[in-house]
Length: 118
Image 1 (cartoon, one colour):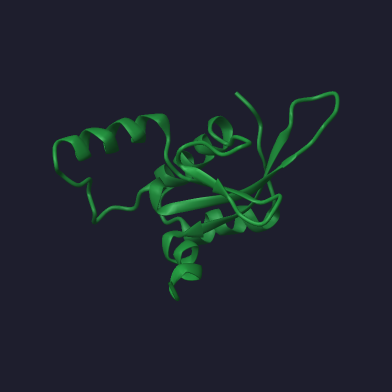
Image 2 (cartoon, one colour):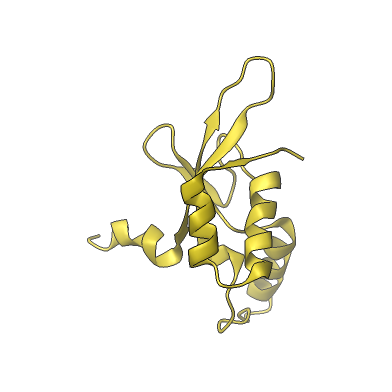
């Protein structure tokens, strides 16, 4: 398990944008276990060196895949980790593993706002 560094802004985002403790915990789990360089299936890259990752844990991924396979949705009225995106970069370290530094937490609306003109 890798340690991720949360900037002050990212901590403030987590506290102010995410309403439930369970989803905050889920996003922290994503930060510990799923921040890759290059990003995996639920992530991507922006302007170098920025990376992003949706708040999808391995457990959530299985639930989403099962729901899709069964043609059903998952609790649309509840807050979920996948509704948020972690924006981060990888701090390069020579003697230690690279360190993910989380710069912020975006809501789904914030993340998609740049695509509104398409």
